[in-house]
Image 1: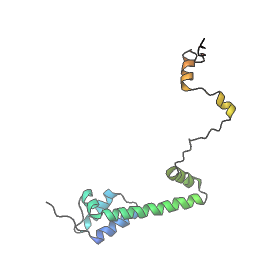
Image 2: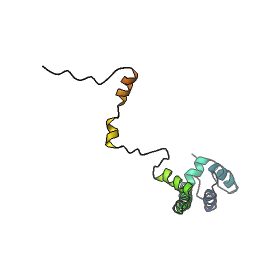
Image 3: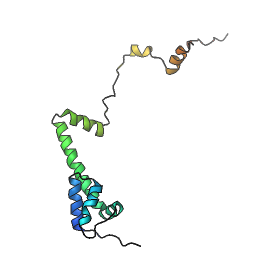
Image 4: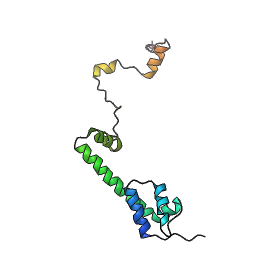
Amino acid sequence: MAEALKHNLKVATHIRKAIAAGVSMKVILDDIQKYNGAPTSMNGMYKTYRNDIAEARANLHEEMGMVVVNAAKGGDWKAAELVLRSKAGWSPTQTIVEATPEDEAGDTSAIDDLLALLGKSSNKKPQEES
């Protein structure tokens, strides 16, 4: 069985800096090969440096999130739209249709519409009992 990789502070620091700069994990893996004892596979890198990777990603997300939220609060409409879409469930295609009670009386169900298309009528009165 292969011996587990030991955590190397130089490799961990390099990984953290690269993630903060937006470098892809594949490029990071290739770049850390200059260090002794560096992992040679993505599996090994994630296994040994999982906490470093997670913390660096969380920091990056927090920093970028604050930039976007602050821009949105400052009046940047594109940033505001991004925040609304990603965090508030907003969609520009959603609309709220306000109807008056008079309009609702003219609404028909899907079955009524289908019957009308087929030339049938659903307005038959129930037979009265004698």
